[in-house]
Image (spheres, rainbow over the protein chains, first blue to last red):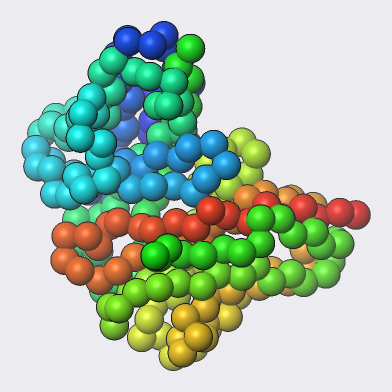
Length: 117
Length: 117
């Protein structure tokens, strides 16, 4: 029973490079969520995806950030032309297809920590 | 306005004592869910306990209980018989019941709990 798998766990990029973070949801889960945790802060919602669909991207910065969840393969969070302010922990979470009532926690991965030099 | 407020940046408790971590929330929805997560120094997000807005009884999970006071919009976490391994950051979070945003959690800034022997 593999949980939510994220990789890489740690990623170092120089300003202007691209960062790609991958997330494989739990088996049987088709809903994926990305959250960002800046230093000393709580997690902030970024985007909610289902297979091949972006459902809610209201938390995504307007530029340089994109996310996808293809029919096959992991969900990808892509950050183009990274800046120092992008340094953060990026968490992926997944849930079942139809959450029962309001119950059920999101299952979080261990996070990917991006450092921009 | 903040959706989730955690007013205690840090708390200290002696081993085997009980501790209460405060959380207040702000929503106009009638249907919502409240969560507590633990984040140890290793960084992963560990689900602890859930309380639905329509649940009449306070949620309990082992040594964790949620003191839910709906009229006051508070959802405090009580940890009984603290253990050294409880030392971690604790986050309160809320999910509002509005269709596609069901997967979106609002997090507080967290409370750093330190358990001393």
